[in-house]
Length: 100
Image (cartoon, one colour):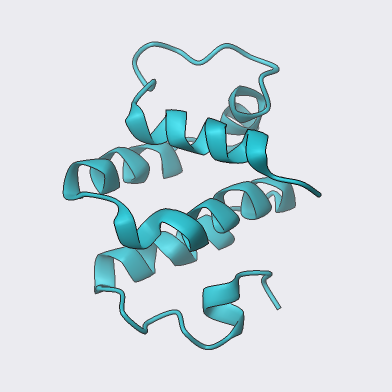
């Protein structure tokens, strides 16, 4: 079980186009469990509402290796200006609202 409400309930493809399904899968299969939880739960909640431009931004963020991305998401390292975007700000706000 991955932890995703969409995938674990067998709903990964229900209501999502192929691009969104791919992003959802990539969000839950990062490599570091911490990033799976942060990005997977973010994608579960937000993937259906992202605009095309936001999905472009999200795809670029998903290309960042976990070892570089996690410290930015947790606030241990500053976010470089070249990757700061609306979706990253959504992820950071979402992460701060998460309770474990």
